[in-house]
Image 1 (cartoon, rainbow, N blue to C red):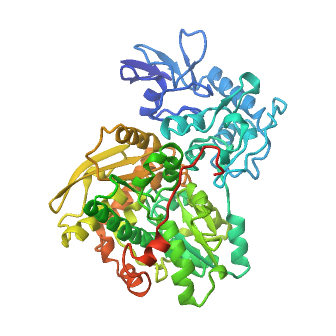
Image 2: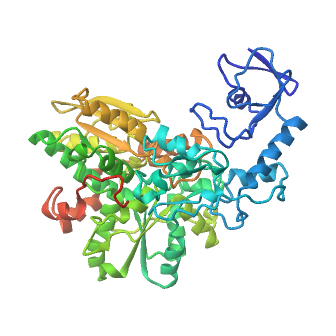
Length: 574
């Protein structure tokens, strides 16, 4: 169908909204509540446009395009309406933009600048709701909430957790947990997807920047590990193209900030595969509980503990790569350095807010001491680098430190949905057959699809595999398994966040799926161009077993690298 937009003719598809048609043609219309691939809510009205013949301005996100429409996206009437909406929103918004953690990515602040709103038109009408600091991962400030509803929708529709919702109505409405409790006693899994969609600073990660900087300034033995997905996303915070791999210069930046050692969590991803692959083989050979499910995503673990406790035996007993490396730092590394575990400050940089929750789990340490002391998100790392005045573009790349600096590409692709499955199958095939795969690439588990399935021949055994990312998709799989409809699966990989760690709750804010796809592409490009692509060929991992751990699933590795989980009531402290 044909439309006329700002005096120029353009095409729209049948059933398409005005906003969708305009975006496809590259015409910018501001939005605050709109969410890609979801039904429109029309809550904020900032996307209004003028349609000739219509008595009122219409929300372009929910109004269908029609043949012959004449639309104006920037008429004086439209601009004045948008400006009024911004002024009304700011009328119930605190004046703390100077130190708000969401700057400079706050959409409300950006729109205020774009539409020339530089002073208040309406007196402040705050809702006087206290900040929720109860969560180990997420800070929630209702005073900054503009009631767009995006956090509610992503929590319920994408993640199938539904720990927050609208409370009360009209001018008294706010977003909160059931019975007005804190996030720590809700069903929240700490995934941080609500942070990723929040257009203001109402939701942010709990920051440990000051604690880490204080430890560095005090000259303590501070070491750091960084997750596979961090190096292909950090660049976006410095104006570089999405998917740029800054692994080497990031290592240099860590050293210039004062970290005593820089380790690669991809190393412990390889270690995880040695344990998890061995566990899968053992379960298959001995008739253990199947399908076995991955355990490297802490939001997923809490989801199972809360909603599907009957499936806890299906979870791999392996700790996550973060916690495996944390255990090795406080034991093996401490011994080699002649240090007491308490003398080491262990920091991890993760794309995930749930890792902040995971580090505090009582089973993730020994003798009351945690294996990981502080977790920073990718965004927090970027902020630290800027505080220290470092320019990634001018730094010379350096290699990470041994004994935890060597990795394979199998460990690196952990950052993408399907990467854990692919890495595990490469090694499981070797453990079962004693032969390396001729083609170590599993296209069926790659990509951004929410659920991916395949049958893989491993020796004489046909292995049924499934990969799900986003807990809403995980719930679909769990319900099928619970009902007995799926008895063909042996191994399942679940990532809490849609697309995997590349789209974690602590990653740079992606305006669309293009950046997420580029991060994934970068990981698979690394896998395609480097030589060592299977975890069992990591010489540093082999040396670790030889010197310290013994063998996969052995007594020592079981004690340090494995854990157990228990049923969790929603009312339990997070």
